[in-house]
Length: 237
Image (cartoon, rainbow, N blue to C red; front, top):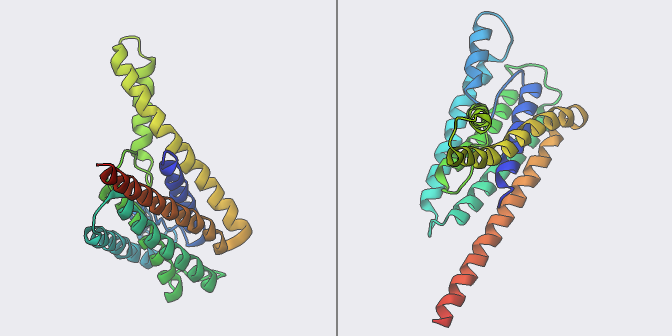
């Protein structure tokens, strides 16, 4: 699906911002951002340092589970593996939603239920981070935009430079065309996540859950269509 990167980027921006706003500055998608917050909190700025520390093993668990599941998928076709990972992430996203609703209003960052809630969110986004590396397909990174923005700026400079050969300029233009939608989708998702949390609390996580269920459904249908096409080819032969 051409829109897959955009949807995933929007989910990452949405969930990362919602968790940041709701859980004392916790990053679930851009999990390494928690290093900065842990450092700040060690000096007395902010709160929830233990929750941010526990986000790392939860994130790693999401990556490990994803790897194990993809390796067990037989046959290991990209669409089948993608469907499995979308389902796993959707289940974790629903669990994140319900856990968040259960702890609302979130008052104490060091409360065990709140920490568990944050860990579930980090595990869900660990699955999405692993997805892009485990399932081979054309696309761009969709959970962290730093590299995409850097490359987009470099490509823009190349496109505008008169000294660049026309073929190199064409390559830069094509790459920029792939990255820009993901960057914009991530930004839109980030804004939507904050606004949705303000109006719906953790129930707002039902939106990315629905989006992941839709992606899983589409991946399953694509796998079925490919199987039917293969069967028809063998029948004609």
